[in-house]
Image 1 (cartoon, rainbow, N blue to C red):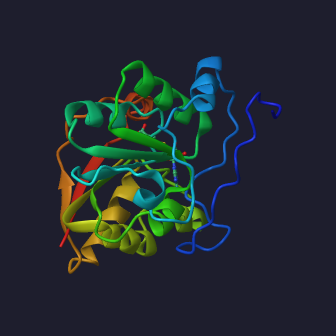
Image 2: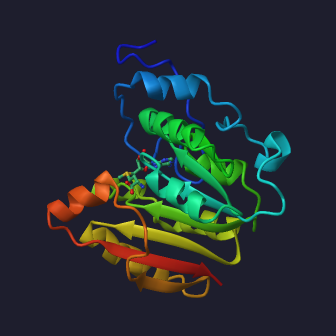
Length: 235
Ligand SMILES: C[S@@+](CC[C@H](N)C(=O)[O-])C[C@H]1O[C@@H](n2cnc3c(N)ncnc32)[C@H](O)[C@@H]1O
């Protein structure tokens, strides 16, 4: 246990897509509740540990007859839960590094007896690089990625050429990457970067898809920030 009451978690894996010390997330040490810790301590087979091996080989998941979707940075998981509930024939892999959110999502999956979600507490970039096979993912969701507003931090943004290339390679042709941001300058940067890769991607700004309102989006709206939604398709 550390001073926030959390069990020490395994170190996060590195990836070779960004530089060794560059991460797209802020390390956060938040207090964890008893129910979150209980769900993490008793994950049944819902929590997948990182290993640099293809996901299906070591976990016998997802079932081959289902389509795989990945939620990168699921927060407290309400969007993943909503998607998985509405699409019971699809499989959802939810990845975040934030331990309390991992506990919340595991708890909710167990309470509702859901079988089509698996959770990873890991760096999604390393997972995509080392556990997800090329052309195996039908869709990726990245809702409200950390905006990293300072110019010197732009190298930490999820939407940057090397990660776009990685996600493109993991999507099936015709697969999608759905994004939303509440940061206007990031929205402009996203549009510009996908425009620069028109040979690989089609799509652009869309209307807000039906999805639950997370705390994060609610706060952005309360602070009068404009939300921009995108949907890009792998050509
Ligand atoms: C601003 S929050 C948004 C959460 C949620 N998608 C929502 O809409 O409320 C961004 C989340 O992305 C996670 N994140 C950022 N980079 C990540 C990465 N490389 N792997 C896994 N999670 C990441 C952070 O830990 C954080 O929980």
